[in-house]
Length: 304
Image (cartoon, rainbow, N blue to C red):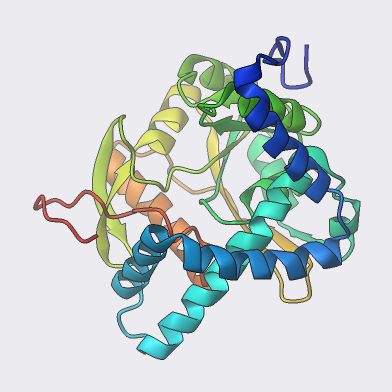
């Protein structure tokens, strides 16, 4: 039994999984490189990915056009380069969070707003800690686990070896891990006063969703934050995190959203998306622009 409360079965070791284990071994080795090296190598890896991943680069370019229309083309191109640099560094951060040590990353760490979590939990309520899909999401989630018993929701990996290795890595620091399909377990955790990290900002393939504004664009967005809060009675706290230019990290927790949930799922979802938009504007290079956030449009049109 792991710290996550999830039984880790024996790792899949059949020959068909060996290529995945080789990749996991390389990532685990990369996780142990000095942090200063990882930052330099990460920027180089990001530049390489920008050239190799043409489809994802074009998605990011289109997203930046839609979300920053007033930005000059030269400035958007610079932002795109910084985004891929952040992606490259983020890959090392993911590996370090799962299989390495975050001790060097604790130096210079700034954590603000823990009192807001304590206030939200004062009457025994659970708390949904809402963030977005940023390149720093895994490592900053791990750093927050130093201070509070944070659980998470996640999308299971299709590759069994990667699923086993990542879940084992997360078991070192997460209070619990719930597959996104396990709504019942998630609600039970919140009703018991637990904390849950949740990122509802990607275009969903299934689930109840509505169109709400995101950077002035209609964005197909899950109503799940509203639904989870309604079912569990949990408070909702926004969690902003970013990698600073000096290599340190800043984690900021906001006061719990007032009058949440309301009776209107669309209004609540718009509030959550507005909060995530503010996070992305604060650290635009670190938001996950390679995701096709606007692939569904109310008029059925296509932007990619």
